[in-house]
Amino acid sequence: MIASTRGAASGIHGYNEAMSYSEKTTITLPHGNLPLPAFLPDATYGMVRAVDAADLEASQVPALVMNTFHLMQRPGSSTIQALGGLHRMSGWRRPIVTDSGGFQAYSLIHQNPKLGYINDNELVFKPEGKSRSVRLTPEKSVQLQMAYGTDVVICLDDCTHAEAPRAEQEASVRRTIAWAKRSRTEFDRLTAEKKLAPEQRPLLFAVIQGGGEFDLRRACAEALLSIGFDGYGYGGWPLDGAGKLLTDILTFTRALVPPQFPFHALGVGHPANVLACARLGYSLFDSAMPTRDARHGRVYAFTNAEGLDGKWFRYLYIEDERHKKANQPVSPGCDCVTCAHYSLGYLHHLFKMNDSLFPRLATLHNLRFMTQLTARIQRSGT
Image 1 (cartoon, helix red, strand yellow):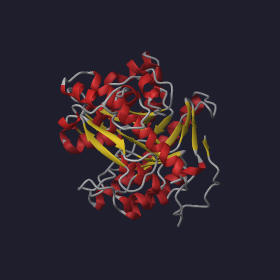
Image 2 (image 1 turned 90 degrees about the vertical axis):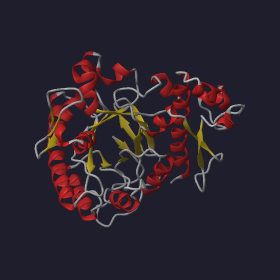
Image 3 (image 1 turned 60 degrees about the vertical axis):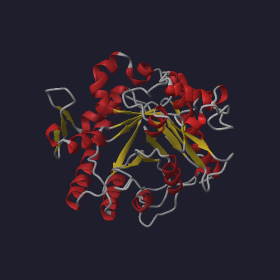
C-alpha cells in the first residue's frame, strides 16, 4: 500500500511534475513502513559486509536490497528456505527488496558470451565454478522472490547499456514488456494460491528499459503502466561512458510515470547522484558504493549543518598521513556510533593495522551519512 497526500495523476502523457518529498510519502510493506526517499544498502548475498542487523538498525537503515541472481547460487534457495527465509536468516526485521537478477545476468553474459545467453523465453547462465547452466525465467524469478519472503518483488527484465545499438534496445524493451506480463500473471497466481491478505503481500515493481532512446522509454513505460504495478524502476546503467549521470533520460523516464508511484533509481548510490535523482522525483536508491568505499578507506562527511547546496559533502581518505593525530570525529555533528566514540586518528590507526574493526566502524559511518542525506532531502522538500 502506498500512502500519499497527492491524488492520482490523470495520465502519463505530458506529465512532468516531480513529486515533492514534503508530502512524506510512505510505502507500507509486510515488514514495516518505508518512508521516502530512502537509500537501501546492497546486501547482495543476504548480508552487508562487516556489519550485522543490529549495526544496520543503529545506522537507521530502513530497508535492504538483496539479489535473486546471487542468492539462488549462494547460499542457494533451498538453504534460504531451510533457514526460514531472508529475514530470519539475516536477522533483519525491516523490509527487504529483492532485485530480479536481470542486470547481473546481463553483465555476466555480456562480459563472456560463453557463460550464457538471453532469448525471448529466459536467461540461461553458467554460475562461476559450475558445469551446469541455470535457467531464470520471469516466473521462476517471482517464485524465488516470494519464497524468500521479500517485501518488494522486482520483475525480471532484459537490461542493456544506455549506449547499446538501437536494435538491441528494441529487443530489450520487447522482452521486458513480455516478461513483465508473465511476472504479473505469476505474482497474481501465487498471491491467490497463498491467500495473502493485502497487508501480507509484497509489492510488485516493473523496470522501464529503453536505453538512451526516448521513444523506447516512453513505449516501455506506457506498456508497463497498462499492465499495472505497485512501483517502477529505472532500468539500465544510469551513467554514461564517462561516469556522468544520464540526467536527460533519467528526467524523461521519471516524468513518464505518475508521481504517486514510488520510482527506484536502481544502482544509484553516489551521494551527489542520489540528491540529483531525488530532485527529479526518484524515491528509492540502492548501491554497494557507500559500503565498498568505507571498507577501502573512503568515508563521507557533510560540510555544513543542514544544507544541500554548493559543496555540501566531501571525501576523507583514511590512509592519508595527515589524519594520524587527528583527535576529532570523521564528521563533527554526526550521531553515528563511530563519530560518537572514535577519532579520525584512531580510524587511521585501525586502517594501517588492517584490523577487522576498521571496516565495521567505517561502514557504520557511511551508512549513517546516507540515511542522514535522505532525511535532509525529506526536510528540504526537494
